[in-house]
Length: 172
Image (spheres, rainbow, N blue to C red):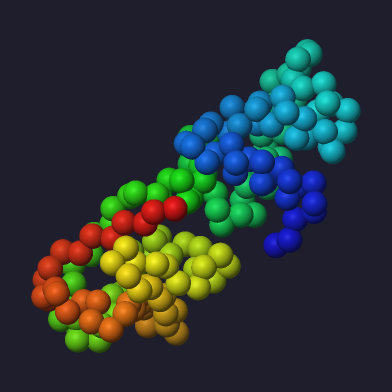
């Protein structure tokens, strides 16, 4: 879904503010209000949330912001009102996967279910992911019910045996 230019600027700034850590949606909204990021919506935003009924105003803008954030594959939100940048939250996290004999033979690791999140931006930001040891990881989307698989350079799984526990970490 393509956003209107004002909404895209709001989303871009929200993602910038989430670059270091997740925030509560009301805190993020307050920061954006204070910066004037909602000014395009009318005079209420230009005043910030200083006057009477500011809780209602803040809640309205928080709901609007939440809808804008939902349009992006780069953000996530929790049921408790915490929002974050997926690249920031993913960076440095470790995901494990036990290698099967078929995966080793086929030189392709099945991503479902334990590694699916690593490639969250494949197809719209990246076509491959760079491996720390060199080469790249390519994600192959299979026809349902076939699983999504990840393939690497020739021999990338040769040092492992079936049953070995692999650890994947994504940076950036």
